[in-house]
Image (cartoon, rainbow, N blue to C red):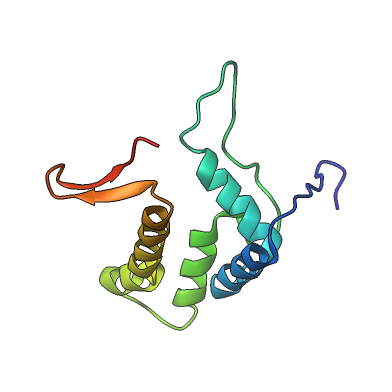
Length: 126
């Protein structure tokens, strides 16, 4: 580890670690790259008092700036030219399935409900 980089340690349930590793493998990323990218992606909408910087610094290696999409596009294109539509299909992959699973989970925990009257999914008041 270089002098300007530090390790961060966290604890998650084994099932979460297994899921993260599976997703990282699907994206051709190390688990560290995956977690760093997901944390940065989650920080994008946050506003804090004082200066903040949600952009990752330039990092040497196969995954510059933690950009999983860049790495994925390079991997897809390493197999030959692809049209715009083919690239969209390749990178969006299982997004619909993941969204459905997420909504099911949120509904199971009573955090989200579907309301025809409200025109779609909505947060519950809990």
